[in-house]
Structure formats: C-alpha cells, structure tokens
Image 1 (tube, rainbow, N blue to C red):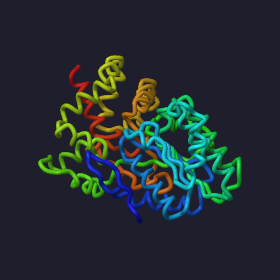
Image 2 (cartoon, rainbow, N blue to C red):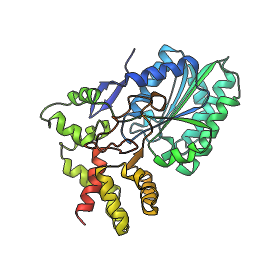
Image 3 (cartoon, rainbow, N blue to C red):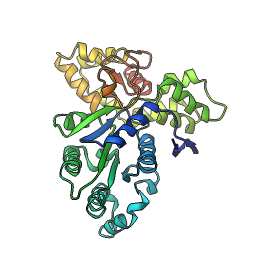
Image 4 (cartoon, rainbow, N blue to C red):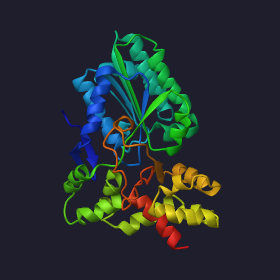
Length: 340
C-alpha cells in the first residue's frame, strides 16, 4: 500500500501505523457506504492524517473520484482537494463562487453532485475533515442529512459511494446520534507501538519515550506541540489552561460539582457511577462540550475505526466508560483545581 506523505513537526514523513483503520477504509471502498460514517475522536488523534491516507487508497487502489475538504487545514492548498479526473468539473463549480472559502463545504457537495450527474456510473468518495467546527455545530445535523441524501437520492447514478466525516466535537455525537442519518466510529489516540514510531522520527535531544507517553497518551498533535515548544510541558499546560478558559470554568462550579470533578480527575468512570446526581449530569455535559472528556463505548470492533484504548488505564485517564481526551487535558484541569 502506498503511504501518503504528511507534514509532522516541520518535516515530511510517511503515514504511520493505523493498520486496522486502513483495512476498514479498504472495506468501505469495496462495498461503498450506505450511510454517512462519522469518525469521532479526541482532538489531534490523527483523523486528518487518516483521511489523507484514505484519499490515496480510494484513488489509487479502488479508482474512486475523491473530493476532500478540510476547512481548518493549516495549508490552504489542502482545504479543498480532488482527484485530477474531476478537475474540470471542480473548476467549473469554483468559478461560480467568487469567495469560495466561507462556503467551501457547499462547494465540495456541489462538485460531488455535478460529478455524479456528468460521469457515467462513477465511484465517488466524499471525505469531510472537521467540517462541523467550520460550519457551526448547530448545522451538523443539516449537513449530515444533505450528505445522506447524496447516497439515497443522488443526482445521477453511481456505482459506489463512500462518505466519511470526521469530528472532534463531543456534542456532534448527541446531535447527530439522535437521528438515523449516520453511523459513528470512534478513533482513539495512537496505540503505544505506533506512537513510539512517531516519537522516533523526532531528533535528539528529547525526553524519554515514557515521559512523553505519560503526557500525550498517544496523541500525535500533543507530541508535535511538545517538540515545537522545546519539550516545555509547563508552557503547553499554561497555554492549554488559558485557551480553554479552564479557570473561568472551574470558578463557576459549585462545591458539589468541584468535589465531583476532583474525583473524576482520578477516575473518569465516576461520571457514570454518580450520573443520577444533577450536579454530575451538568458536569458531564460541560466536560464533553469543552472536549475534555469522551464517553467511550464497549471495546467491541464494530464501534471503532481503529484499535480501541485499553479497558482501563487510570494513569492515562482512561476509564471503562469515560476517558479524558489525553493526560494533558486531565492534568490541566487538575492544576487549575489545585491552584484555587
């Protein structure tokens, strides 16, 4: 399998690990998707890299015409990408949008619709990376239904279609999940062995792998941030606390909520154990809205796009039913509570 190149920590590297996820992408390509698949997981866990690799697989190995959109891409050339075979169609659509960026998701959908209409029974793939944050969480349901309509009521006949959407926003699971428009697959941070390979790409001097693992918990984005910051964990922690407004969040908690949060820091499954309490219900909602905690399902293969996390690993903040997105997320909240 050809591995795509991705930019990581100011260097170009080959896509690493995620063998199970790649196998699932191949299965989607072989049979198509009959619903919208939403790949949900912690921020920075590698969903964008997976989607870029999926584009290569779908194009090169299965002959799909692919439209890939990533409104939050750092490189503007990666905001909208498409297979050369539909270049003329894409350019024709883009001409009708003088300022394309604000409507880039609509443009991608229009390109797909036009390709279905103009090509003879094509294989079409739609890859939408973190679009809900760009279009607004209040529109997540609407756009999921629009994508489902491409599958169920296409403007032209197709041979197969694959529709994948990624999201880091916890509230999207609740919003979209209450309908039957999409199937969720969770993607977790990288497993230990794969994360070690990524760690080994980075030059010396650097902290030990164990120290980095305890901070990042397999999250590639945190690893990259640590490297760029000169391995300054305290600086990253300070920035995270400020950017997430964690001091304001904890200052607004009442005493019962604060005590519950102190317990959740050490065992996130406390959320489930005490979910009957109104304070814990509010706390759960807020922690998920702020993308600090994830409610994780059973570890059966059906619910996961890749290798699930261990059944329980409290050192990394992982419980059986709930987990901190990374150890950094947990440590940030812990530090704010400790500095009260």
